[in-house]
Image (cartoon, rainbow, N blue to C red; front, side):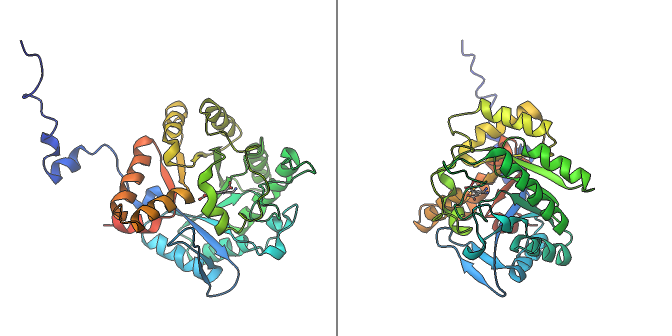
Length: 331
Ligand code: PBG
């Protein structure tokens, strides 16, 4: 006796035409699922291509506003800003992070004024402002000091909120910073300013081009393993997420993205909160290198990887391909 369900069951039936495939698709992907990271640099009318991130540039504030306008027109709900702080303004303690007229704050205000319909997400961490490239304040032995750093991060978050940030995204991995930032935001009346915690951020080899983009690669002494997570760990990621949520994070992020989709899935299943992933610079560079080598079709690869993030459980993805993808997806 043959108990095999074939030929009564043929899974190819629902795949046999585009209309049918559309009806059974389990995952959707649209521009609203994308956040576009943008690098800001000094000057006016400036575009500086980033060689290790082909197709991505740093923009002066006026130009970054134009990019935000394009993003909004393509249906992208939010942009993420990262400053390339001039060398002369970097210091051991990263004081420029607290300057209400720093590059970051000028860019936030300019986008708020010109493109009020788009959200602005700002990174809280000191690495774009420190002379040593670490995310916090370093002692004589080279250790990043948790509590001293946290006090500065709170002030950095307030400076960004006052400039008009809609989402504060601490990417520094200090313990306790989400709660401290939340409390300070409440005291100042920023009740609706969200916190997206870089909750599970790994010490990754995929951040290289980003460090070029914000000008911190050549400066970085040592590595970030004393505060960012070990790629070997998953249970620890769940503890990080649990703590950040308990401290008041509205949403959480897993970073990098594709190599950590198992973490996304576990976080989503355990906590049922909006989970975001950061498809980081090295991931973008890998796709672009494959395309440049003639080994892949960019559009197909971008849409497939972004769909994979959604399938794993992401509400959205921070990706340097955001504008390109949004335009591909646009009606
Ligand atoms: C810094 C920060 C990093 C990224 C986002 N915020 C780099 C790092 O931790 O060294 C990486 C993003 C990317 O690679 O695209 N706090």
